[in-house]
Image (cartoon, rainbow, N blue to C red; front, top):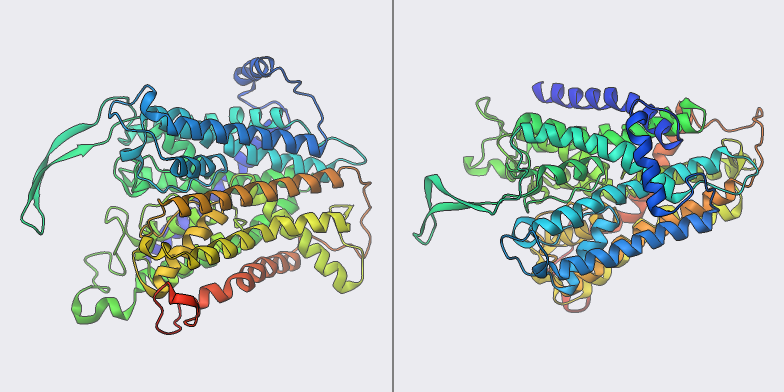
Length: 586
């Protein structure tokens, strides 16, 4: 019962904060006055003068897309160079060397695409300069780019017989200045109050209160404690659905997540902006029912996922209790499957975080998903494979879900023999072709990427487990990259030239193909006239449509990935590289 109360409390607090935040974001992105305007408008105008842009420019979709892609390309090249030259740059008290070309490319692609997949351990690999001026900056601007594209799509839906969908430079500036920076400042200060590091001191060596004796008889009496600007990276990593941890263990590390309150704060930050954007969408299209309908469709999947993972981890499996080695029933301790979980947080917080982080396309962890039960690990993987649309990443999750809305409208329109339309705009073949790119990019990239990787002889050496679970590690890695997530099973070593390159290319493909297709849809819709509602118009804000949207999202994910989720590779495959002796369930 206490676990159920925790789950309900988490969701209630989340929605309670998201409602007013959604209204604030909509006003700020549209240039309306908000309570921070007296402070931020002068800063905004200075930024425009420095950039030399006109904040009132109205770009066509092609120019808007070109600006977004060019900005991301400059960030990719600049961050790659920074990481490779890290050893020659300042703020490196540990004298850490530069990264290899393939790890630098993978990391840059990861943070520029808002994925934040990490094939390295941050405290052992990156300097303060790389963490603060490299990764943290991308935490802000990559999230800002997602919000910008979402509001460009909203303008495409709302405007009638127009040409422009806004200015990319204005949108990304407002997203960072009015949304990301104020929220990150509040969260960072709160985290520092809980003990999260925020300094530029060299790493410290401390004496352990209780020396540890290893299996070989060696006694360890000291520990190196990483210092550095951690709180300022953790805040935008959570709020911007970035997820890249300062430390290798991410938010399971006590330096990033020291207390139950910091855990609650970070967990709420995971979903707060994606949920709020649902209500921003309703306000933006001048029909709040539309935002509530999309929120509800997403919430149904989230709630079901939370119930499944929570139950599976609490009930554990009979195998865990064999021989009395694991106690899954005691009232004196959390019980259930505690392997890979922080005893400070227990099962309820760990299960909630796992669902929130994969639903939000965030990727941060406070437990090791590789240690979850089979079904407990399956659900987070499936949430990523749905295309990061169950709230999803900041901005990109919602415009991905709008792609499913268009698909649902199109299918139902064909079924009843009417021309499909959404919010008064007729859906033509061009929009559907672009829409296909939006929702097929994820399964295509994941399945092709993981399929090719499964045939590479060197890949099994990266697996922590043989057989079906090893294949799950591989599939999870590509699902995480293709789902714009960044989390890992935590047992898979992806830091090899092939995997770094392959996963990096998957992240770039899945970020920018749907983004460009979404802007093309916006550019097409903005030129159309508004069609008045009639008796035959399909309502997109009632429970029937919510149910249909829910089914379409699940069908795309379930049908696309069922073979990979249900079976490992065929035993007759050449060389049987994954070690299968028979067909088995994952």
